[in-house]
View 1 (cartoon, rainbow, N blue to C red):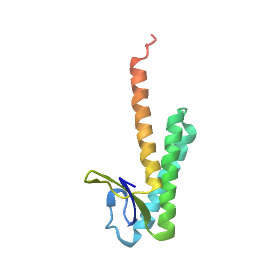
View 2 (view 1 turned 180 degrees about the horizontal axis):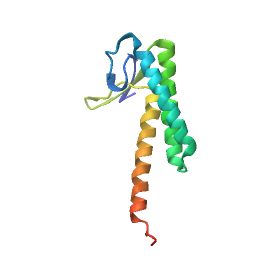
View 3 (view 1 turned 45 degrees about the vertical axis):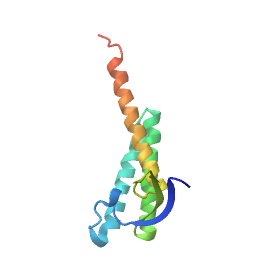
Length: 125
């Protein structure tokens, strides 16, 4: 498919290969941090009154759990989607990464819109 290839990559690090040199304890460290983040995100999902934030935090948590499952099963995250066009190439990623990125973008947009709504709302004295 133009602009999209399936390329198998084992990601032993975190986003964009960062922290790749932490050694044999990397998967344990990454899983522990990810599961702590998942607990915080699920807490956020349950306590928020904003639907977009609830969906976004659940998507981020789900993506993190998907990557944790890969780390437990394989010791690394399986990345396989490679987007490219016009000589430009993005990092290889997976569906869990997509859920995380889409969740972060949705949460950021909702936060910006929420701040703007608050700034333009009439103030009561």
